Length: 154
Image (tube, rainbow, N blue to C red; front, side, top):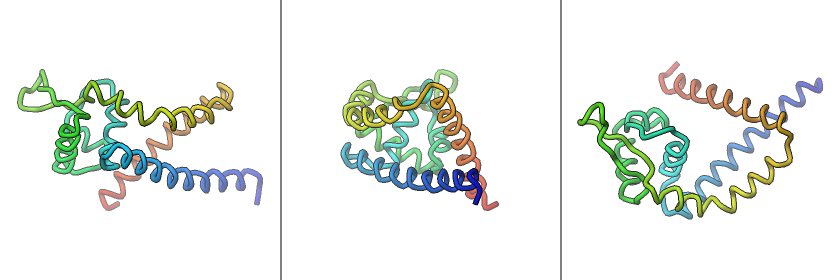
């Protein structure tokens, strides 16, 4: 096996390990916060959005049906993690955003793990970090496209 083939296999193997470890970590953090792991993923996605999003957009981001996304938002609202605002362009539609206290609540739980992940990233050069960021962005796009393909039965 060539050096490149060995490296690619190692990346694939480590990606699978990373995904499994992240799923375990996500569940543990959700349990720590007393919420469902899907709810935590939604909170994390809302945290990186530039502003409030519709429940339909939450369904798209999470892969849930519109009805399931609505129930997810209901749970998050009940837990005090999100707030609904009327859409200024369509008063019949609500937009969802993180509640003001959500970042602090999640941030407190994320403090120790966040520092541990940061310590790993600090070992890389700026050029290496750029490659990692590019890979994650591109792999995310592929993962989303493949999830959509599989969901559509292709």
